[in-house]
Length: 199
Length: 388
Image: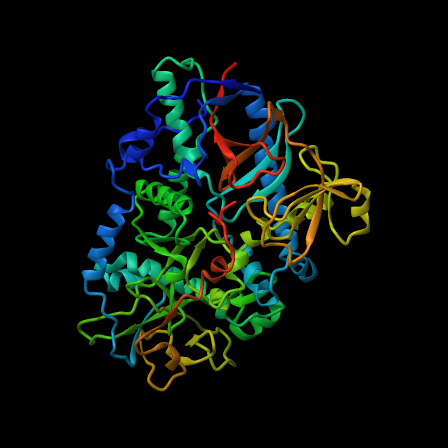
């Protein structure tokens, strides 16, 4: 058999109703909910050396930890310093501390940081804006056993799990995030005419 | 491969309403056409279509791997320089893809020939994955078609499996889906993908492409200002890269379906590159960039813009004379030429086969018919069966 098995009941839309019905309902619930952006900013951050530490610290938000960790890794690949040669990278970060990435080498992300908008006892972590961290094993490096961001800001010893970032170079990412605008995609379509943009 | 006239289901329009298939008639012309169907042998399906589809896809991936490493080729593909690194990173990071459709010329004998690859925004998905499937179920139930008949159509099942795999990769992540306004066909396509994603346990949210917002922290957001972590966009990368938010894609934390590297596959420059890497391959037609001196060796050829959809701006040229042409808005980025290979004719109809893949797995076929030699978006969709 070269055909799908299909649960036909799940494919049936209600008689006479556009398939958009459920979406519109769902959209209304979302719009009515409390999606208020945080206006406050924070000077404190939590640091996790790996996903497990984040999950242990936030047992009810393990999925969030996972997403933040993956986001941090992804950002890290974009932000981390790039070296054309492995030896150059290892000179700065230590033997075995670098990995290849599209014909370059970058230091391995050995931790990540989440801003804390809450207090020391009641965390309110910003899982949406993780930052990847690394450190160096070279004694001569300023980042020796110290947490370092991709752009080289130093955040204290690697045994620490908190950081004061008020004076660091992280200013651009803290504070509230505003919606700057919409409509930056979709313009090409209005200048052409077709029933569909597929092919 | 035969074309069989067949009784229509008398109640199919009511069934279409029941299942939410709203675009079976477009501009007053029939789009879904079940007054006939195509019949294939299992051997034709497996040896002539399924296996070559898998192979062609792997060959296309080799082209991507070649192009991302080569600045000059990226320019040949009209990828804006600002995106060269980002596309290479996306490729080397192995960003996962969802689906694509190869358009093949095949007449039941001889090897199928690749005409093009719709790798970024293929449509006619619902008609293929579900609606023609339902047609066969009902026609068999009613005794119109033999119960031994099968169909090459695992599309829906593979899509749900693929979404389940991706869901495990991004646990708890909602999928935003997006298409343009005012197109019932595109909205139907993304609704179908939402249905498939939800059957895989993924929560989905819809918004139009022009409703996507940008936050001060460089995150794309939906209408509730919720960050878009994962986006399916039925909107071509070649447009997005040239629009206002295009540069924001480069450092975005949003994961895209299709991924950015698909901008290389959904590009007609793929065709000359395939011919260059796999010259003489039985499933390929000779193809060249128009300014390549070798292009003059093709006295009978099809001229295609680097960016083109739904057959727009395509010309068939024989000994320097245009013998068929389709209008459209494309062509500013240059052209490629491909040896003319006529579509098989069944009566007055020119027949084109769409061979679907989910990720890298062949997933089924769809059939389009047009009375014109160039298949466009108003061509009719016909179902098929496998019966030996």
